[in-house]
Length: 340
Image (cartoon, rainbow, N blue to C red; front, top):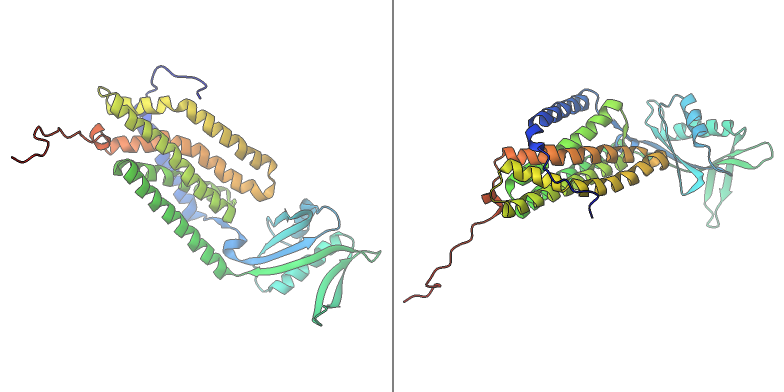
């Protein structure tokens, strides 16, 4: 399916050097912000307290955030889950305060915001177990907020998650390089990895510069972008190989320009549809999917750019030529291997 067909090839490679200089400067800036400011890691990586509370009606998430901010928490994580009445609160580790103190202090503030007062409930299970539960009751004696669960995520768990995430990133990179080296040629594998790491580092640079929260969902988005960007590079590499077979009189520049130009219509359709879906998550998905959608949006835009101007240009500068992709056909021996 094609929206349109461009009859004259666009000279992308003529401007490749300029765009790659811009890419290099952007890459260096991203690395600088990563080193200088670092990532604003979420509780999954740093450790902290996770609370689940339940309201008799739909939870007012902005009001809950405002209550937490009044306690001194900056940018508190409050999301809904399961039902609209359930809210999950993630709080960072506070110096000089343990999980029990933190959860009690927060719950008392939430209870007070609902015009209620905290009360200790003591119940005995059918098995005879004694359970003490902190509750919040209003003037009529009805529970206005229920504390469902309190968990502590230790820093060690966060370190393991960060290490596992780094391992996943390295495994994806190595797997992609092996795949491209087998399917095409090592020059294409190197070019694709350079382009894809360029995308990943720039995404991380955006998160470091704006101090957006880097959570497990964002890490998943980064890994997804890595695979997504590879797909676009493979499409262009496939067309380059096809052109080398069909157009024997074209130079390498002309072959690459023709390959990119002929895939523009497909690129617009594919990435346009994907971007619409991601933007719907960004604007309608709520706080839970917000940074996930932002990472994907940046990754898609830079993935298209890097496949055209970085991956193809690096492959060209590495000296890719027709002989790398099309193996010469051996002339058949007239004796057909017979021995006289």
